[in-house]
Length: 278
Image (tube, rainbow, N blue to C red; front, side, top):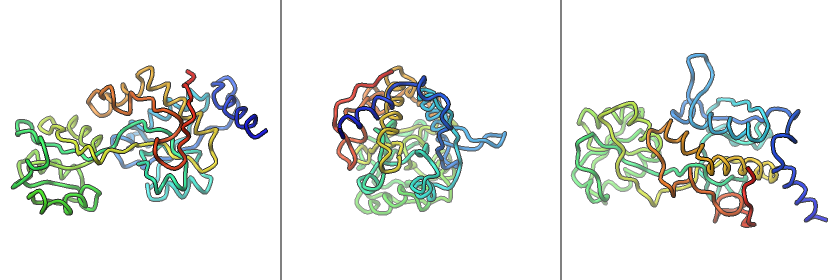
């Protein structure tokens, strides 16, 4: 009986937009200050990669989507309290978080990346940083990494109140490289022609996934199915290039349909084979 009930739920989840008509809008939330993922429009709304991504996913689910903007620190508690169906904000899937919520498979990889001034010698390894100055956004995870590794690799750290200020330090020559998130570094390069993305610390790579409340298994299948179809037809890759200025590689998360449901290796992952129905 339990297996039949689960199969029925999955069939409804994958049946497509025709069965979803007449349902209330889905609700999700973003941190509306995190460009280019989500940031204000001149008209007072919110725009960005994640807004476009999940509006398209909701459309393929046959649902309207209401996107709220709030501080990231309050998003997960609000979702778990029932205010949101899932989060549209880029959220790093970790074992600690996955113990308390469900995650879809990753739609982007997040990783630490350096940006350098155009014409500078590329960074081929972390040893190339010896004797150089690295700029970071004060208080960020990148600041913490730089402070912890400065002595090991022989570089100095310059902290700035904002990421744009840290990028400007590289453009003006005060710092050799800026360390930030890969998507933010790529976006900065589209706004500052003298700033180019460079070396990625690959061991920091993780999934950016959509979190859902515990128990929302059918909704997760439905949402992940939409995201996988968007990978298969190139929609996520096109949005990525549009917003971040670089075409994703064939093995990047934008182009990879992962096996099972969720993030492989994390709590809540379901390894049951499932082909996307588009």
